Length: 259
Ligand SMILES: NC(=O)c1ccc[n+]([C@@H]2O[C@H](COP(=O)([O-])OP(=O)(O)OC[C@H]3O[C@@H](n4cnc5c(N)ncnc54)[C@H](OP(=O)(O)O)[C@@H]3O)[C@@H](O)[C@H]2O)c1
Image (cartoon, rainbow, N blue to C red):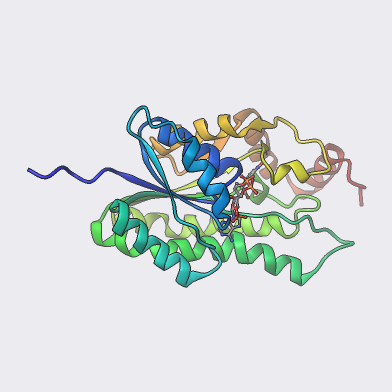
């Protein structure tokens, strides 16, 4: 009797930061991981670092998530080489600070291109094979910055709010098609992306810890995976505040001028 194919996890943005830590964490647990990013050198070092002691492995598939044809070809290559993608963690993302002084459509478009449309390209490529198989799990990395507007996040925040809303929109139908959808909302995680932040980051955690929290979440059926809860639950509560209380509170916490 032939063996059932091993489950395959596809992670985008696996070259650095959270995606990289998650790829290493899952491989160490024994998973087969297809790792995507644009920088092949990052993927090569990632593959070399994989702990194979439990039979896990990492396989590089360089692609740019903003190129739908490359994404479609990447998904075909992963499934052809490793077998059906059983779970996808659509994590590739970027950030550009934007507020009143530097407000620009160009910046907004660049962030939407990666965070929203890049993730959408991945969904477009991976949903049809999962629908055919009537099984699969897709977890999209959004952010607590999508809960409500925050200073300097006028480009990043809307892309994450849109991602979460998009996943909520797809959730029920996907479940009916046998596909589990999840949204991952991390607080601050130390990565090359946040190393650029000029402001203090409350409750900052390491990428390894974020990877462990995500791996736990991927074993659950919860729609939202969020951590560290001592920070993200506070932001959830802030969502309920009327604007008259929300804006002064956020201005105080972030040290932004009150208007
Ligand atoms: N760090 C945090 O505190 C935090 C908090 C909440 C949410 N998040 C979200 O978590 C995700 C990962 O963030 P991170 O902090 O780990 O970022 P990071 O350190 O900058 O890593 C991002 C990864 O995504 C890849 N990537 C970027 N654009 C891509 C594209 N167009 N196509 C393919 N790959 C692309 C990058 O590699 P290449 O440049 O080589 O492609 C890199 O491997 C993002 O969606 C971010 O918004 C992060």
